[in-house]
Image (cartoon, rainbow, N blue to C red; front, top):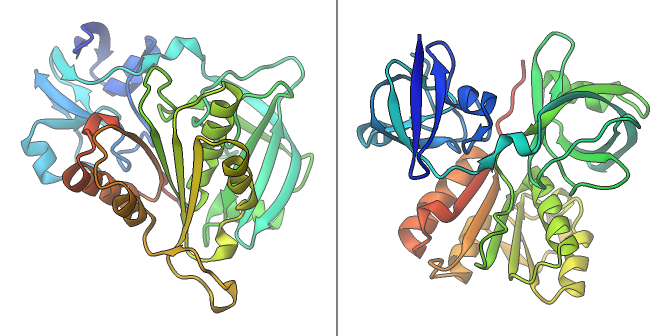
Length: 338
């Protein structure tokens, strides 16, 4: 059975089969709805069902709370149509602008930058290119058909290199391989680009980038792209970590801030070690933003980190500091040990 899907307020329409999600149907036809994890955990694809009906399945959905369901909200990555329907969603752009490809990549650089973080560079084949927005992610394709998602930590580059920051997840199937057996010149297959986490360049509003841990990776790409484009919008980067060693590229944002008057950098540690000799900000990173910006009504916020950090940041920025909900863009990291 095929159903007609209408996206408001754009009026864009596409068709969806009864056995496919709204997100998959949209992507298949070049309609890029907001999304991140694609498994119901991050909430980036949350939108309102204006008319019609959809099946959300029986599995628990961490990103869809009871009050969301009561307000008519659905997750496009999980919802399958059971009738023609209309949804409310700010369409991002045309997915066909950057086609998703499946490619091999050779590990060109493999460097441990923190006790539990590896900086990995993948080189594309000479005959291939990958177009993407800084901030998007790729899926590493494992031999058994499973996949692992990692944000691209660089802006598009002429040398066809892709940079990833990979944190070791205890007992994690893939990340344990990364930290024990993987080496330079190994080949990884991946698909991408994916996701709708990238800078909205049509806006002139000042920007707040909120990163937790390796959530710094997509922020690095976004800042690199902004610098390359000559962006003059104020950019305030907040990077939260547990201890100083977890700010694994701290010198780089310090260099950005020193070289570019529109870029400000604030590192925040939640549990600095005794030998860190830390004189900077402490506590939760989103609380530093709350303290520094009591009125966020004229800002855009881009957040990347754990689902807990992203959820509480959005809630408090909107409720306490007047951030328009549509100006909060997020990519929440979820981890798998299987």
